[in-house]
Amino acid sequence: MIVGIEHTAIVANDVAALANWYVDTLGFVINYRSPGATFVRAQNGTMIEIFAAEFPRGEQQLRTQGIRHLALTVADFDAAYETLKTKNVNFVSEPMESKGNRVVFFTDPEGNYLHLLHRAVPMPESL
Image 1 (cartoon, rainbow, N blue to C red):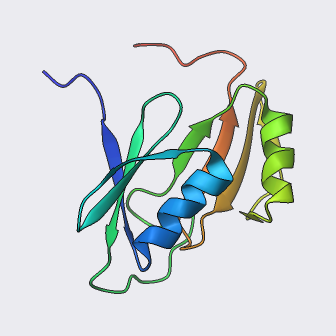
Image 2: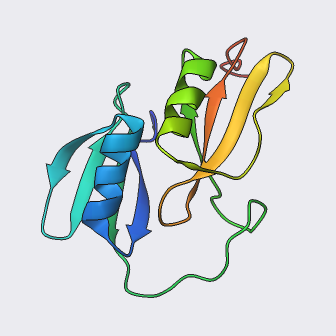
């Protein structure tokens, strides 16, 4: 059956600029390019496919229906947060902590929501 999620897709107004932002700002690498799409890969192997938009999207909020954010795991929350601050990332929240988990929300240049996440205890594999 299904063993995991290989990638998530983001439709972008400027594919190259957004892919480069994920590389320069978040430390991803470009691992595949085709005429219609660019794939960027995180250190743990997860990928984002970025391809060109054909239609504009409506206004997005954190609670708008649909896929709403990508959670980016970090080993050192404080270091990652400070690095993103030096890169002028658009934060949409202050860092928060709940039950030892730390999170802060921000957007990429095209307004997609992301957040840094450090879990004190990993999520259970099943209930």
